[in-house]
View 1 (cartoon, one colour):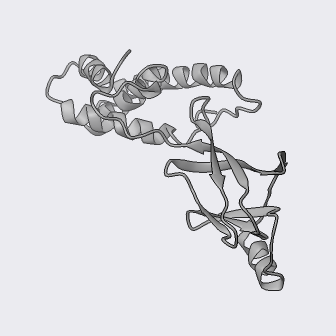
View 2 (tube, rainbow, N blue to C red):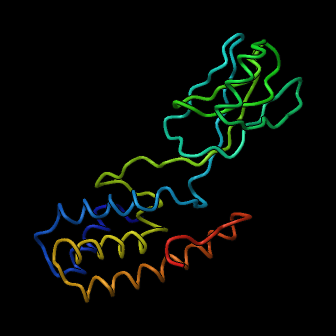
Length: 201
């Protein structure tokens, strides 16, 4: 299994330089940040929370990026909660701030807010897109394995453009990145119902 160090050493070999260790590691982390907001087969998960009576708010997971759905369980039956805008939720709370079984929610200020305010303890399951922990030198993750080529070529294009100032090699790295991106998005489509290709169309 490849690590960030393996990826860094590949970049040093690609660039034919031995004095760019810090530059390569910075470029790798920048490449991961560039792609981590994308919807991939490996950055989706579920988390389950318990509501507290008379408390409308729930904390978001620390690794939260985007919510797909919220499902509430009532008497062993599961129901999807309807997402609402802040304006609509504010109107609901002003007009009728009651405690009952939640039916709607919004995400605002790094919290989930339910309406109506829960009148009991309910189980709520969130399906969401999440951010993987930041890479360290010894880490072996999907970014340094399945995504090795994509991160490699994005980082290499960065290095050639901003450090070595070699436009020809930067363009070559970008073409390789594009090719790897399309390959991975085809793979992504096998795991997801919808997988729009963004960035290189």
